[in-house]
Image (cartoon, rainbow, N blue to C red):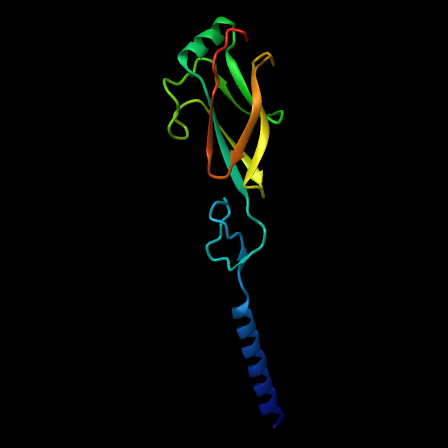
Length: 153
């Protein structure tokens, strides 16, 4: 009798364990805009991560003018952290349509924010700043910033 009770108790406990584990909701990021979206998640755990993209580009006139001033390399800084660099001779014939067409692509981790405002600066190989300003980045969006030559630079 004790053996039967023990087996019956073991079956009940096993069944309960199986049922309770199958009822647990999978946790994860439920936002399809995030880089770590989990399509199987049934409960959002606040772990979503986002990235924003920026393309800094310039045309031939700007390229020629920069090179006339001895600029060979431009370095892209976001919030004073160097993110990328581009040769002053690598100009675009027109505004880039797709990521990687021309210019320099900067991918910035936005953390748990779907959007964030940063400060960018473009400096030459000697550390002289040629362009700077705010840049607003949003998840899954591409900001295109044309670096235009200005005779007052």
